[in-house]
Length: 282
Length: 225
Image (cartoon, rainbow over all chains, first blue to last red):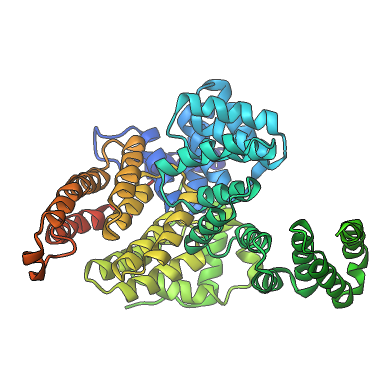
């Protein structure tokens, strides 16, 4: 029993010595050194090392602001949203003015469609840090969702003034312009966004819709078909044609949608039914 | 040189790493064997690699170091190869994404560079290094107003970021020079118009400054966020 205790003590001592061995005398404290090493490990994507360092730090002071922030970064990299939310709430408990946590919680609420909660967090973040482009982007999305597209565009433009060319802000401004009917400008913005982020499905889909609304149906069909297949492409373009009052074209595309995929019948047939009265009026 | 390509050694390391992660130590695999290690790692069954937390504390630096060395030597294609390999293994590596952006910038593929920088920014939205690199990319494209804006934002998040400060200075210098350029062009009389007027009279200055700041940027592009 005594031997076992001695071995355990030796292991603990060795562990502590291993932690201190790399420190130049009188420079950083053990905490600072561990924090720095953990941050470097996260930057390099070496999450296993970061996790080891975090555990050491947590055993020393789990509620320290630096340790919590590190924990947040690590959970983010691990994709552990539930833990991340708990950590951010804990950070705010310690410091209600932590901008990063306010932004994260705001964006998370936005993803869950809790618009009021999201707006509250993001507005707080923006008040504390007027350079917070993520908060500006989030508030813009909220404004668009609440049909306040002019406000939305101001938020996106403020964001773009901070980071010109940011694809997300550009794409969101583009979509907002679609909502306000400024289609040519919208198309330009969506294309700009796709140049730096070509794989974003939402942007490509929004561009197809924007082009369809301008009456370039064949082009829109190609773009949609690439994303969702023929049936959806015919249905969406048909719907856009109906909105533009091109009733015969709309009818043609919607019928094509039904024949491309019979299971699509209900959706396309409903759209077809909607345009029937308009056709009679013509 | 002794190599450690045997599967048994690797699996042993994995087990050791998992065990050690419970204590206060990390594993240091010698740098020289990292390539052999990663080659052998490919043969390990997927189930040992699914959990990030159980991954061994592998020596990850060499690949970034190799990329940095290739970049500094102007071998951007090789740098891109190393960085792509790094990114394949660690898709959330902000340093690798920044490195790819910087490499494509040097090849004049600003669109591709932007793609990587904004991916990096998605992972670390307040990274002064990434913002500074975006600013530098705009400088290379002569988009001075945008370069100044992003560099200012980088400095907002890290007031000590030398690369961002240098990029901001270059952007502002060139922004100020533009009205003067327009005036010179406008004042040219028809008789003189046959003389060659450079489209960008101060481009030599941009090139010169860019070279200087490129060096600075090299130093900082892999810095921590």
